[in-house]
Image (cartoon, rainbow, N blue to C red; front, top):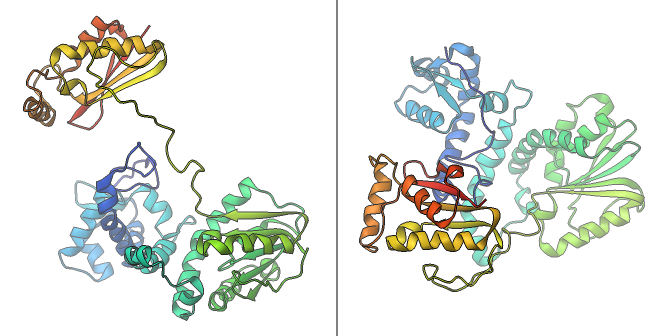
Length: 428
């Protein structure tokens, strides 16, 4: 039987997520396209649906191959990749089952399914568009949405896929913002009308007008026909390019204007004009909601300043008892052994009571048997630091103690598996 453990998170790539750590995981970024295509291919081939249909007993590669019409060894290669990126699990008998997140989000019978969005919009459309990014960056020339959606099939696929992903987002929106009392909404560039259907369905008396490109409206109206009558009758579509100066709506009419994924999809000079048009369309007391991919205002990490010095010298140009944290990463193994204790002593002087010293480096276990990569990196340092010390937790802590740190509070953690460790010293 193939049992599914609880997943740690829904969104990750290869070895970590984009939001973890202070620096880029280059391998995850560079090779992420392989994982993306494995996922998109599995969705196209309905692998997750077939595996889920087999239940907890799972599905072997032969039976899966029969179900999807592929008997070649390449199917097992794909399945191995899907296991490696945690989309599938495999048991001792070679039977596959879906991970928790795959079962919840990538199986079409699940109420949380958004596989069509990934498969059709990201996999079939945006993935290939991204291949043109270097050229677009250099030339500044790219098709706008109006041009792109002039192809009816492109507009149909995009709209259908976006609907699948937007319904869940719209429901999440209403958990943060209530529309009680609103009676008229303008949904600018509203695509399939997903936000309007959700908002109208959960807000008695609300009516919505969706402004969209003609090609999108054709598909959107088909999706509207699938909504309950009470919702369908309160959502209407008006064909237009919302980035144009004049909107075909009355002024001072709407309680709510919504722009979801619009501001980031038009040239910069158009954005303020969109907001001005929204302002004209709104009643006094109305609200404009701008929903988009938006980064934090700082655009980066906290402020950092540099001071020029050789940290191995006796006097540091910093005030004493000033810092909560002192970090030495790849320093202890890069200086002659007699310098190490002096570094720790200088750190101790610079720290406030209760502060912490972080020593991160290539550090072997105290029994000196490995890890092999840590030992080899220490050996490599000998070629540029002949008087250096092969680091272990105990010989670091003993030098911290000589510098004034409390050895009873020192802690050791593995950082890069099989390669580096972190030793933490505390100043009482």
